[in-house]
Length: 409
Image: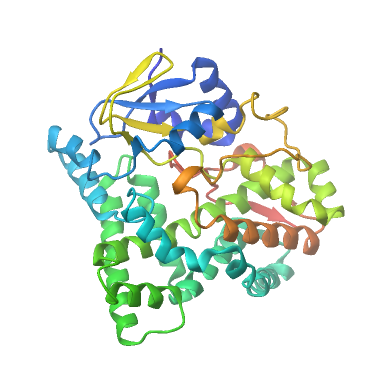
């Protein structure tokens, strides 16, 4: 059985056609050995079926807390610079995505009040206003980079306003998060660490300001929760703000960018959606499934020996879930390699499953609906300004997103 490497997940062709790559993975088997990124020891696996994806994402024996297993693996490896950098990155992360109950329950409970469907729906007028203003800014030119001019500034503005962070700093957030995502398992881990440390220092200074001048925003609420008792530790607070900024925009940028590219490459589906706005909810679900804004889950560690498909996943070994492979599983979806915005049965895993299901899913859905519907209605002549083969993709093993998307209208 061929071992999959992270390099296989980073290639431009893999990013360009994730459906074909995922089909190739699934042909090799339901559980594949994976060459883990540096600093995690030698044992790692990746699932490729929908059934196994759900099983792993919901199984409490697969844990997220790096201090339980990831840190121990680090201590057994040689202390070269790359491993030390990633070790420091792991030690920093203490948020709801990287811990297990009861810490996960406590952290998620503190943040979840701001992300209920009712609270998110109240943001609709503001999100629509942002979308309209972004398009008005480029309307006269007849062209834009759909990523830089629209897909990025929309969600980063929304999450910045929710957190009470100055919107003018959004380009700096983008630069830091892109550097961290691209280099944390790449060839420049020092750059990732430098960006992370700069990001952390920014958040620390921001928290000092919020403690001195609290306001009606999510950060002030989290600070007050921390100071109200032993409910949110300092590192948890910093890590949570970091997660909300990065996850609060990166995946939605990819949903809007990837989704619009898919529609531009499937003009029949784009025109169907333009003519029938009632299809918008199902279209967003299908674009989430088909365009894979997140292709791979974050790692989990086996807390005991676990047998899957005749293979033994040893205690302490890592497991990743190929979300893109799960979402084209023909045992779960009819004609999964076809983009069909009218698809009804669509229990995709783009937002994960289980207790770590994406907290921001309602916000991402709303932002995606408003962004794509506004583009289609305001720009009826929208078209690609380059050949699809010329588009470049960000080098992340977990996220799938375009570096730019030039369009004319």
